[in-house]
Image: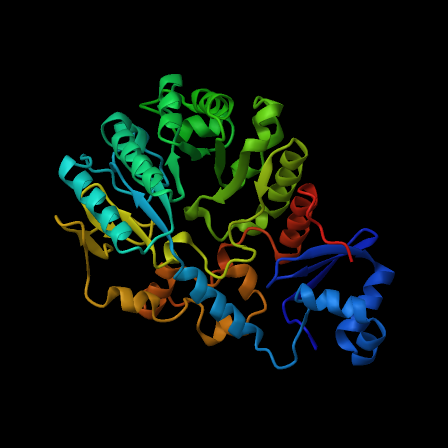
Length: 438
């Protein structure tokens, strides 16, 4: 047996947090107990003397077989997860938006999904079902602002797919990325009818900073959006909201425990906070580290769940949902994309949906994307952070291979360091009562 290269040990007060990046297992021990564990990890004699501890550490991958290539098992898990039978389809009803946020990467041309494209999408999903390629289906709504065409596009398509998968007894779920401005009580009732229960909604700081960015010709939106989030969580059964906070250094310096205090205590468990840096301000993260940690700790104490950092991942061997083979993103005009974080130009499209419901992929594009894992390169495979990083996303790999980018590593996008992430991850696991005991 050998000490896993993905083991990390972080001292905190009178304890040490022990974390394995491959298994995602985490626990704490006293410093004296750590000495015993460290001896077992590095000494074959100690392993024989502490056989039960040795077996426990091996079970949770802190110890690995001497002949096992730990990087190879990440490659294998990647192939299994990337090519699984869960299908994820994201639809843009429109690219129009009722806001014009200064940092948005999208153009917002007029236009929305036509009845012809809606029928093509139905045929596409029917073909997936007929070919028995899927055992679970997730439908995502994106844009633009999808609620601008809720009654005309979202509601009828969602209802159709709900009935389709219900008849087949196949798991079906939906989510929507929306600015949340257009939500009202009647719409919430319709959300429930179509089983739309999961939302990502964004705030840009407190009322002052948010309203400077997200407004309709100067009309403020912060109070209305915050109330709509409260209404969704209060009146929609089984709902949850990923509350994304887009931030700059100015915004993250604010006290979000005060900003989000109006959210009632009894629904805070349904809201997960995700701090996401505005992409034009990448490179200034060192200045905001302490503010992020302060806000994460305060919000968790208030009863919210908090995503420590979008850079790190646990027990997932790919970076983004768009990296999976069974994923497609169909724009309102029928053009197909893989990345949801780029503009919808003809150049970036990877295919187009035809009348018969078949995606006509660009030549060799799928082979180029999925022949090898995105992280199958010397730099990533040697890195100890690989299992908590997931490697580059599909788009970054393509940009690197085509010479558009000169760096395959995604490390420059992280907001907090690894030690802070492990400590925050430990706190979140402890809160869920899933901490290991040695």
